[in-house]
Image (spheres, rainbow, N blue to C red):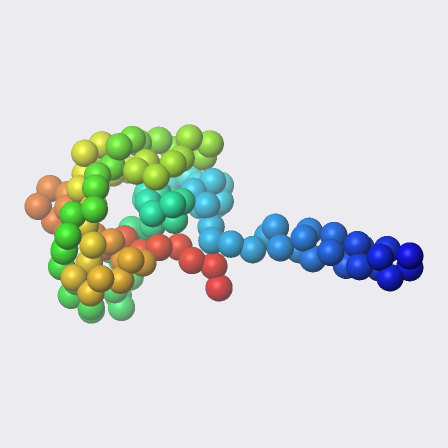
Length: 122
């Protein structure tokens, strides 16, 4: 009986701790920065504009296969789902990067390619 009680307490402790793990959500990002330039794609993965990140620009990425497009725009943290962006207009095309890394995507906006990178935990 004592072993079962200790096991149950340990399981509850581990379950409680694991709730804080995972990638940042759109809600997390908008809570930190209401002006964030993000979109959600690929089963809830949030991508952020990387135009001002020097090491990304040095990669000289170009767009590859088209994956889809932005289907909605909002800055409401509760209304995010795949295809929704904070600043990109509806209809903006989303492309794979030429290096096939799914954590870097490219959008084309007004004949300019902009790299967005996935926001990953850890």
